[in-house]
Length: 92
Image (cartoon, rainbow, N blue to C red; front, side, top):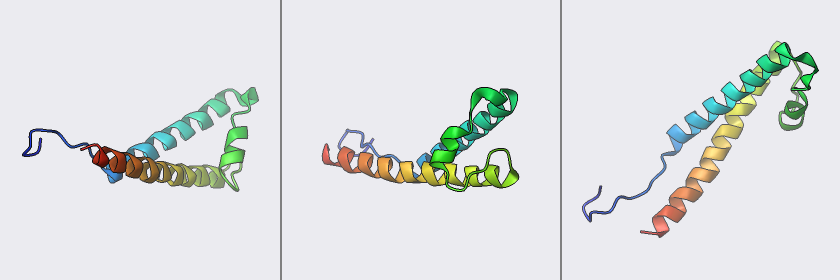
């Protein structure tokens, strides 16, 4: 609480970026694992659309996928967090 008795809303961008990047990376690795368990499930098709130069089930593809999950996680955190903080600040 601040001195006026109302609680200000603020979304810290670094924890948000780390959380989203981690969530996207875990989700990506889960999809890779599911694609190994169920090879006919076509789990690789979405990654080919969203991750440039992604190759299914190669070390390079997994590393690129993990890099792209961080890029998308931080992009989402910066855009969403900044917009949230801007609009939350206007409501005070």
